[in-house]
Amino acid sequence: MEFNRQHEGPRQATRIDEIEGRFDQPILWLSVLLAAFGLVMVGSSSIAVAEGLNVGPFHFLIRHAVFLGLGAVLAAVITRVELRELERHSHLLVLIGILLLLAVFIPGIGRTVNGARRWLNLGITGFQAVEAVKLFLIVWMASYLARYRDQVQSEWIAAFKPFLVVGAMVLLLLAQPDFGSAALLIGITLCLIWLGGVRLLHVLVPTAVIAPLMVMVAMSESYRVRRLTSFMDPWKDPFNDGFQLTQALIAIGRGEWAGVGLGGSVQKLFYLPEAHTDFIFSVMAEELGFVGILGLLAMIGLLVWRAFRLGLRAVEMGRGFAGFCALGVGLWLALQSVVSIGVNLGLLPTKGLTLPLVSSGGSSVLMSCAALGLLLRVSYELDRSERQVARHKESRALPEPVVMDEPIVVGPAPQPLRLGSRGRLRIEPSLGEIA
Image 1: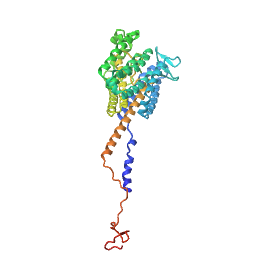
Image 2 (image 1 turned 30 degrees about the vertical axis):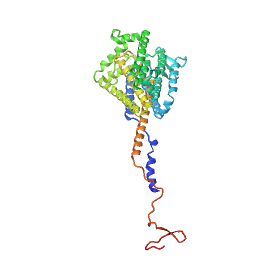
Image 3 (image 1 turned 90 degrees about the vertical axis):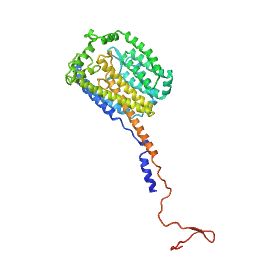
Image 4 (image 1 turned 180 degrees about the horizontal axis):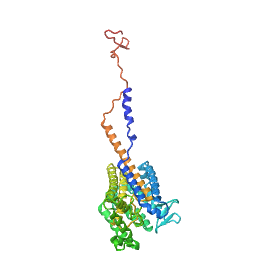
């Protein structure tokens, strides 16, 4: 019996369902570095703005730090949620997202800032509904592609259905108005559908319909037309429509290779509008130069690459929902960063999109942290699955342990049995032994 216990102990200690996963360390540390970098730059770029508003020099820095802390708590909570629970409630999440976009139009709940009705009034602060909608849409899209991937790859109607949901969101965003976020949601949806294996023709058809409509919407408002014309030639009217872009380009040009030094920016001193939010990249370029910008781009690029790599591994393992969640978060970070940096460099028309985890903000910082928490949860469950599969293969390769029902008894050899005179069994004595 002792022999059996020696073989049962190690097998029970390494049961497959008891194996835990590990978080992706590069994603974790890149997120921390990017958040720390953003905290420093928000402090540097917002002091003059805060003093001009008479709220204290470190108002925006403290506010940003508080939201980073709340975001870290939110990310930690999401890392504890099983992905199957998120997948099960994905329809509820997308419904909540649409209701949030509708809530901004309700008097007393919605709040107008700079002519746009995008914020929900939470009393002590405002919350931009579209930031939560981005994450909810990614979760729903991941669930849809995981469930109907075969149909999406072969049927046109299955590939078109997600655009009905996104179309409803886009209409609500355009009514706010928020053209930049609407374009971002469309971009994320198109890319996820493409990564889901849809046929090229099934992507080109909705694109051919959506693109002209978005152009018509962009040209329907005079301020959008002015943004487009100033984007083409900002120096034509540098003190009016082209003021933001010209000041951003001046800041980037002053930075040269090594920058003017942290805190030494001149353009942030009431020359560059929104220096701590939409145009924080220009302040970075001025203070840290080309070298500092390369460091920022390297962190964002590595984070996006790890997200894409994680998503590909998950899809290859048959974990479609986890894989498309990771791919969706990677697309969100990549597309929003490209648009924000492109606006600062004069490569794209001005849009109100922040640089994730870097620009000062409340709802943007919270939901960026939540997205990274989802990414870490995907890495945890993928690592757990890979280790469980490896352990299962290892256990199948090992020989089966020998199981004995009776203990081994060491003693004299058994005596031969013979029938006695009355038909009873008796032990036949051997030489030198007493019967």
